[in-house]
Length: 135
Image (cartoon, rainbow, N blue to C red; front, side, top):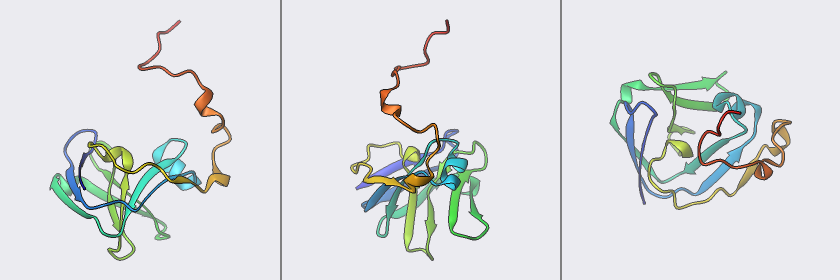
């Protein structure tokens, strides 16, 4: 498979060739903190190859306390970007950074016991196709 991706501002673009073996939604406090959301949505591959097309100099990587919680991001807009971990053996790709269709669905929630207290029954909330009208 071939995937294309970019950051929000468009300065960083990349291609990924290969398959993703895993796709998880992580609810750990670190992923919630660095996404600002209920969970991170990350794709994992031990075989796919990442190629930066533009803006590689904007791609910065943060390794929290050198403990293995690693996040790459665009230094211009802050968007999450792919990174390579485990001494080059694992490609981790934030699903939202991919611009093309992804051929794998999430396989599960991880660190679910750490989920935010407000992260319950979200599927029951009213759904809007765009920002709702103010009342």
